[in-house]
Length: 571
Image (cartoon, rainbow, N blue to C red; front, side, top):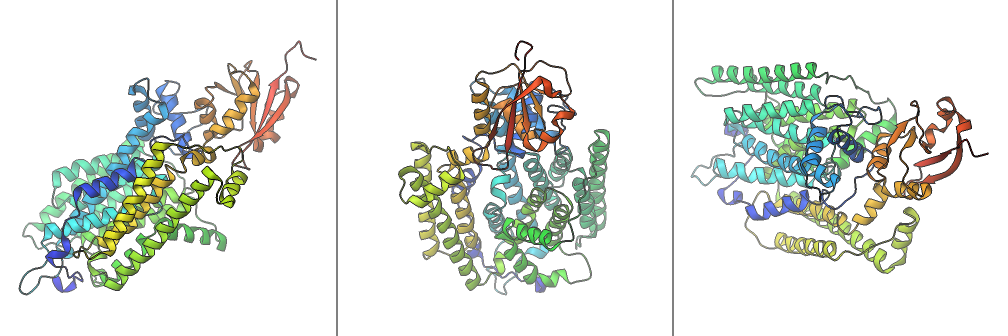
């Protein structure tokens, strides 16, 4: 029903984005952040700690633990992938790098799934542009490919994707498998057998990555969407029943698997009814999904005539809206709001892509200029601070670094500098290309956002990598502790340490940590400052003497107290 389609696109506007350029952009976005850095604090090194325990055979594969603590996210598959990678990696490869390799492929798979999901949604009959009276409108394949390119660019441009997608955590695995499920549901009318296999992998992987409830909801919603979807084919009803039955069977199988493996957990935490809490959530939604949400709102407005009808919208609107609604609901009802919101980005990118055929020239120009100013300014700031750290000119940025990260010593790497310089030159070329006279292409408005996001991420992972490792890693804290202990002890008693601290001492310090409730003869005791009050209830104070207190050089909230065991020969 073309009169409901707001897209008016000529064949000249759907020219193909060069594949080599798109591939290089994806490589420049994916690899930095996985190579050359230390495991970062909190979720990143905590997950890596469980992978190490599994690889060493120190814990059960179906119930991984680290010093008696279960993972913060009840996942299995992400820890298995990292542990298998550590086990099969060559001896010369660092364990943390080996554990990141499968997650690098997970991110690449999420990018690919977003492209294919958008492509097949754009092949929907109601997503097609208006047919011209004398021909010349965009062909369905070229139109879908151009929108898929735009969807992938929008996905890369999203600010919230950068850090969380480069950590070895279950959040990245959930993103990958939800994107796989998204692409499978989108491609089901066109590739039923391949979609069935991919959808089964996606829903199963999502459940094994700690989100069985979300997998079930996505499966049930996808079944209803395909059941209620309109079609003019003569055998449409029978085909819809088969598709729906297939999705339901896969969803039931995933639910039964989750029950057998005891993956179901009730972790709903409703937000507090305070203005501060809602302000925080509002800011998260605004910056995390930028620049997708303005384009998504534009899509909903331009395609509103398909939304306000009495029946269900076409697949190109209903599938991404359902995925977005499920992810938004999880964001509002779980403690890890940002990691839940991460799962909405593939669907939001697809919705943003459908704004491209309807963008006015003035709106596209506004997007270009804002993006140019924002990302060029961010890149300039990164370069200025780096130059200040290297030379002391200007003095204020270097002084701020010394104040925020005392003890950090800047270093120069020719290879990282060359990569950063090449990326900056590529950005300058891209800007010149974009402002020049080019043939119309509907994906052009998202080239600068995707390129700018990739540039800033790459500059952070090259120029600022030593500083970020110092500030966001527990390695400096562990090194300070090892200096105090002078020589590596056989074991250390740990009390009140969180998962990231336990993993850091195990990996960086090569220490064997023991809990306080076990009889041992460890010469040292490490206590987190928040657990000092409970220390007398778990140990005999007569056996230990306070030795020193240490603090993470870049984190004022991370203090540890070191105790030394008193031997019988000491007074």
